[in-house]
Amino acid sequence: MTAAIARHAPVAVIGAGAMGAGIAQIAAVAGHPVWLLDLKPGAAASAIAGIRATLAAVGRRHVLTVLDHLAAAYGGYRYRTSVLLRRKVAGGRSFHDT
Image (tube, rainbow, N blue to C red; front, side, top):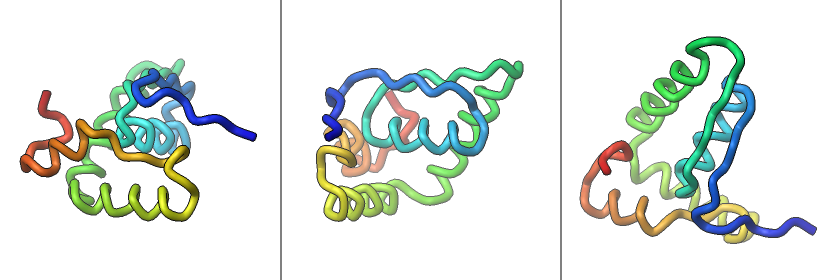
């Protein structure tokens, strides 16, 4: 049985390739602070730029819809949308606004 991690627990992802970037993106969208690490110089920065571009292209509301569907299908303990993310979407702010 798996247990949910704390809502604001940091997530470390080793490897900034396609899979690592995808895991980092899901964790960040769910509201976790994410540390993305890779041995290749510039790989993590490149992955972060790609994640930002993907989120901008997909659109904030679509991301929330996807997470809501995942929560319904697999249970909210695995996929939940952070309150901060919902507030940003409601306010029309970017994912990158602080």
